[in-house]
Image (cartoon, rainbow, N blue to C red; front, top):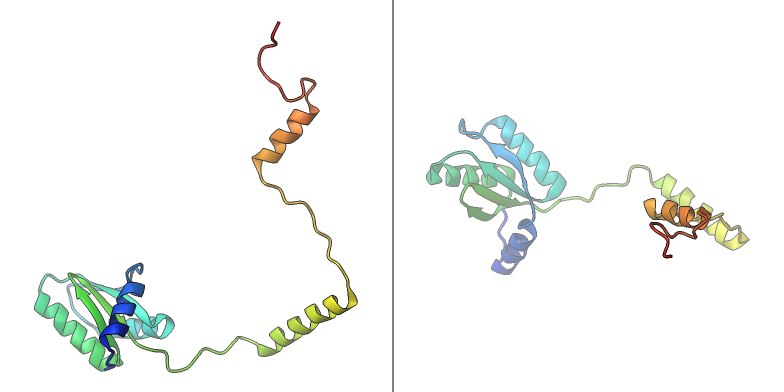
Length: 149
């Protein structure tokens, strides 16, 4: 179980505010499958929210203690039926293929050195372009409606 300072806990609560629960614990309780899913989510995101569909606060606190003990996570917050957990990543994920990045960087450097320019096409802004084109093509010069007279 990780221990965090109150300042770290407060910062993590702020980050967790905008998160949605990614795991739900049903009224049946905490199962091995749910623990594996929580472990997977903590590995991927570090900071997660869990919704517990159980009305007993003592049960929710027991779930929180068990999750933290078994998965090495830190309890950040427990408000109502929402639990917030944090577990720092032990290792950074490696890029898929490092040689691809090296080749891409080399090609862009060669383009800059040789001065080859790419062609740039005008961007379409949507319906506004069509309206402008129609105004220019109409005999009234884009004016519509009645003529003053």
